[in-house]
Image 1 (tube, chains in turn green, brown):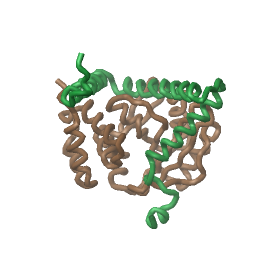
Image 2 (cartoon, one colour):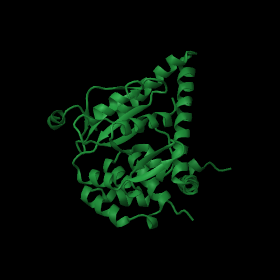
Image 3 (cartoon, rainbow over the protein chains, first blue to last red):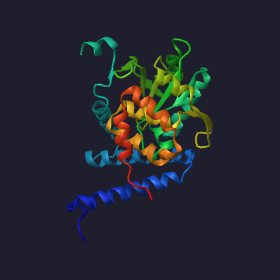
Image 4 (spheres, rainbow over the protein chains, first blue to last red):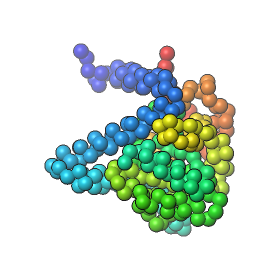
Length: 95
Length: 188
């Protein structure tokens, strides 16, 4: 079987297929069902972040694992929100 | 604590303080687009009194530790108060004050009532059109993906595209809208 990564057109077709499937699935849900899915996915992802952090750090203490997850999320926020928020209007005007 | 439990706590705090609210961020995007995970509960508050946001945050104190400093976004100068859940997972709560921006005001006025059995509450969401306009205005990578997803799931034929285009023209985000539409593959 050919590797789609070797063929940009095949890779784009694969990406479109995956996206199409996600869109059509979402279209089959009600607003409430989509919201419920978001809750479920969020809770699932947090548990996996915890497991990943504990595994990577070689720890068994969940509290320590959650602290590591928090540290990682804080780093992500600093990347995503860089330049987007400031403590005073004045400080942004000066920058 | 599950994310929906935190969302309920925020809604209850708003209700207790008599503050009108609207869920925004990933919840609004997921409601109209492709459901995705989030790390925060984002809520817009219609602040009548000066201390309403502080009052809501105080109601949440048993569950959430808030940063005492209010932040301003550098795009619209809206204020937000950020807190982190005391109990794992470290979900954030972001309380945004409704402020004097033409689009933000209209978006809040057009919000839709929603009865959620999951939350066991009545809550409020922006319209899908307003989610798209807002996401295109913010313009971060994830915002643009969210806008495209809502456009794809709702379908331009079922959206008020004239309304979206008018606001995009006002915000100078027409090109972002065209790119989001072009990024949707044929769905048939």
